[in-house]
Image (cartoon, rainbow, N blue to C red):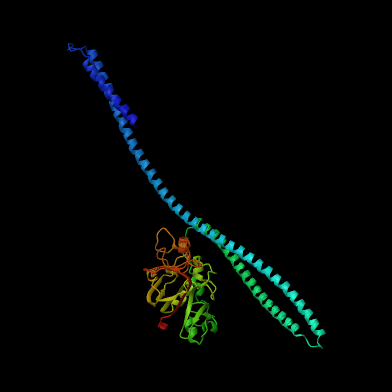
Length: 465
């Protein structure tokens, strides 16, 4: 561009110089030039004007081309900036995945080392047991010889020294038998611990594979088809329902009113619903219907929408009752939602809310009003929220899915809030990525609670005390 401008300016200067030179070199005494020479001069001036106009047009075209090129370059720079930001975000996610993978690998390595130590200890104990068994055999043979001597001397008085020797040998045998029993018990415990360590190593290896696959795989788009009404399996469409089925209690409070005083699994039949089993926690004063429980991490709570709607797990250990079943109970009247939590310091607390749950057409929107309890309130900011899972994002955070980022299905408001259906972790993890995917209770003010036990139950408002 600069070369073109210099060329243009040089041309203009050359033309101007030629004109000045032509004016200076004219003889002053020629006042009446020849007509031919005047025509030639005017022709040259016309050529110069044409050349100047052409150069001006060329300069204008070049300026327009430069402006257009600048606009295209600016667009390219904007796209490069967008790409740089996307690449940086991808690098951050990749770093978190690598950090989590390294942490799991370190844990696996540590467990493998423990596994080897336990195995060596088990071998050492086995060798000791074999040695003790050999000594026991020798002692038994000595006792046998002494018994033969005693039989030979049965007609005579046994010397006091032999009696003392026999008594001492019997004591030694009794002590050895006790030691053998203790060692066998220790060996059994070591084998059990070894099996537990193997299971943990296998579980951690599976988690490494699963996390890497889950965090890097592309997420499928949500279906635009209308969700089927899965609650229909709870509705009673049969006109020939048996008298026994219709006579079932509607919830655990009615189980209590009918005289049951032992906690356990009972069949119930809420209004306009098919019967299903629930776990009733019964005390001397009342009964509650348990809808969620976390105990030891044996059940994976990172499930799909269909699983959370129908329910999963073991009613006597870890489980989620199912949104459709919870809704069929809660829509019968006014209910209380009770949450009981225990942290890794064995501190147990509770909190209770007035509880209303909308139906599947509203994605089971929850409505809560704080009532009582000794646990800081962390659920009031979730009221009015729809339920979300990794394959159905209904949270308030645009451009991201809390259920995918933080694991499990819940009434998410924004990522980082309370989540009692997260991944079960043993003790408090130092890894931030693992910690945010765990089970925790986060009040609006104060510290969050990492939990080892949770239980959510509901009961009619009439039982509120």
